[in-house]
Length: 150
Image (tube, rainbow, N blue to C red; front, side, top):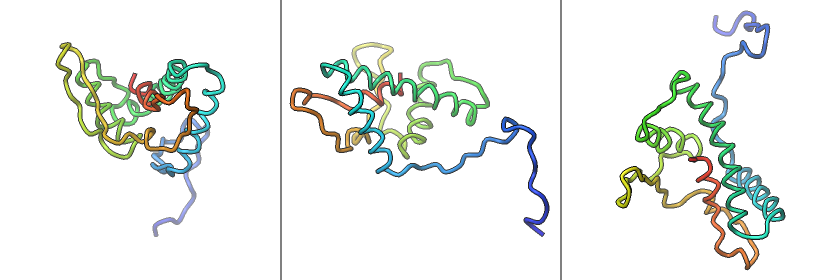
């Protein structure tokens, strides 16, 4: 019979296998948390550039953790060292885990040989309803995603 018997006991929490768990977070929960992140940082800064830098730094912390997790799960603790391989991994695997779909495109820049762009037509953080004061009208929430990619 399936399901009869004792559950496997683990001596230590570190011995438990890493389950994938639930893969999605509700959009409203993410919007609320991201809005709070923006509002908190907005009270700590005087200009748009500093606010975007702080959001980028927060995104960098998220990106480092996501990279560790995905390298462990997807690649068996191996990291890509080639630039195009890294960008392809971000474009497909990382983007799909974070935003539920692969990024729209990965393009090579025309001005520099080592310039690449990951583009997304409707970036999730720019679709959220974040209100900013009129003096910070040119604010772009995409700085958070730029930090994740960095």
